[in-house]
Length: 239
Image 1 (cartoon, one colour):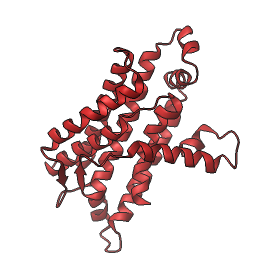
Image 2: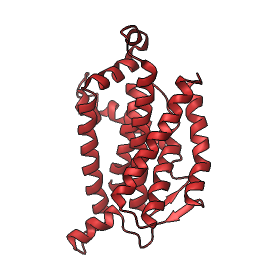
Image 3: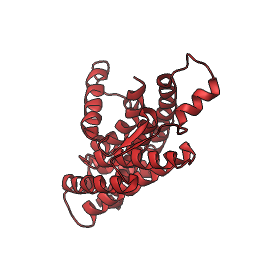
Image 4: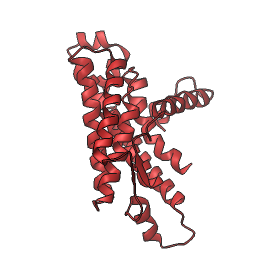
């Protein structure tokens, strides 16, 4: 469960592209490992673990932006653009770490810092990961709910619903797609950074199957919760 909450942040990112933008983004597998790689290298180099998470989020934004530009400016089909970026990120992640795996033995992670605050032998790393995951997930659910109610957020949601109509109303749908892909992969990379700190290592293969897990989470969540309500409120869907 403690690991699942951290992966849940990744699912929020997948939800942005898959449900809101209606784009099957394959960059997910690469950007998840990208966040883990950046975070692992920075934590081992004695950077603040929270600053490492911020850098992981920023690199995820760049990865999503590249996919968005390939799709909107170079007119590459969105699925292929995601595959191209995901494949390229495999080599980039190895270049960042200098090898395929970076252990975090003895490094100070956000989970270890929380354990040191409580100084309780019964306070395990799993419990620490669960608390950190719930806090981060709650913040991002609240931020996404607020953002999607703004003018830009509404334009983003409308782009996924009816792109032609939104374009006719004067909205630059290409910019909306790039923005959505950037935010999505930023969240996914941040999730990768948290998972790397929780499990104690960053690995180039840690993002394998991330998209499948994200899609499965969305489909299962909507199927189970849909039994109680035909039209789920947006905030409940995010949770």
